[in-house]
Length: 308
Ligand code: ADP
Image (cartoon, rainbow, N blue to C red):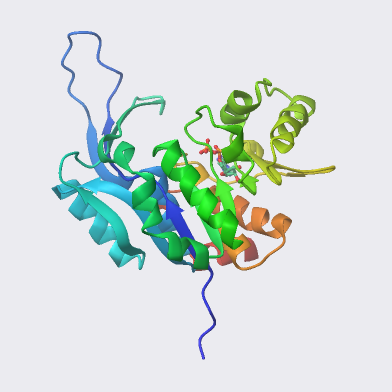
């Protein structure tokens, strides 16, 4: 008999990333010839769902995309990854979300995002997936869809014992009631400062910021620090995990690989420290490849990486 796969529901966003590489950004009124173009699946929800599926999860995605060709392309990719897509709404009025990063010669990135259908995800859309959420091990949320939809998902999860991970990205004001329903919060440095009101510059200020968030009812704060690794805070305990040394190609979606992997580790019933160590490896691997969704590592890649 085959082993039961860890079950994860992701409620989140879809984007088509239209990536342009150019020497520099155009000035006002200027038309500039760029050097490269690439179209990649993206959106934090989409990336995290793909990461969790590649890492061995039985993954269901809940969200909204347009009835357009970008939506068709993203949908085909999700089906190919084995993600359950039955709760994804195809919006007849708003198109699929798009993101347009411009990467200059120094590798610096500026991005314009147009959320479109993502911001029309409703609490009612989420309620249609209530059984899937209740039956899953972990619910994984981000903030590229309306807070009301994410909060409803967290309530359903909380009432059925499903663990809730919130990746509070991009940073936004959140009701305290929502935070009190979150088990693990995974902010980066900027999001930590935004949510706690404490500027994070060293380990002492990180600890103060984490304490503010723990006092709002979160069970653990997992602060991601890019190439400086991870700080893990629980009530009365903190752990630092250094980042793996890797050759950086593109840091886009490192946080998404990290969150997808964390969800899988916790859904497998691992201790928080072990799940974070697994996520730290997945985040490192994601920066070694170009693009968002395409750079999400597989279970085999992570175990080979950890073995080496
Ligand atoms: P975000 O992409 O959300 O801003 P971070 O940049 O903090 O998040 O990255 C998330 C995690 O991915 C880090 O905590 C680390 O585990 C891993 N990671 C990110 N950048 C690197 C890097 N340059 N080298 C190794 N690991 C990295």
